[in-house]
Length: 219
Ligand code: IYR
Image (cartoon, rainbow, N blue to C red; front, side, top):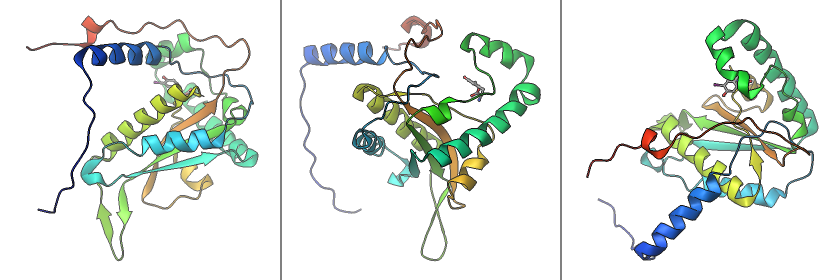
């Protein structure tokens, strides 16, 4: 086994842990996905810091199998919008079941995705199915789990920074590989427009499950 290095950590009292956990919940419980953005610019440094936070996520064998593309170029945003809308048009008219369309009614979504141009930035998260080594393919492990956790860190960091986001999954997402010219070992994972809410934004009236619906305790 390799030498380990020492690790310093901070002890927090139980009372403080309870206070902190409550305020983290209160803050995160205010997070909402938004679908209408203003075009107000976002400080790119804050986005890069949020991406750095995402990159602190644990990953299988610490392979960090993720790449974050940060896009503000209007031509690229337009190209991405048009390609996403082309897929979504087919999804809404042919590919999605009646039940699925019914489930989405309260979110007011449709094939049109103006937010892909209006939001000042798009973050496209790619998962690395494998790494390209010196002479061969190097395996990655638990790629979906790892990139899912990193994306969770990203969403939390953005929210705590005061930046708003939508996790958008136009399907299939192969067009992102082409438009962003990504190598073969990277696969699109999520498309996340970020920015601030449009004036007068309204969001669907959703309810979060109560803790007794999601928690089973075994003491
Ligand atoms: N990808 C489509 C449809 C869609 C699917 C689910 I599940 C959502 O929670 C929301 C939308 C779209 O973005 O419109």
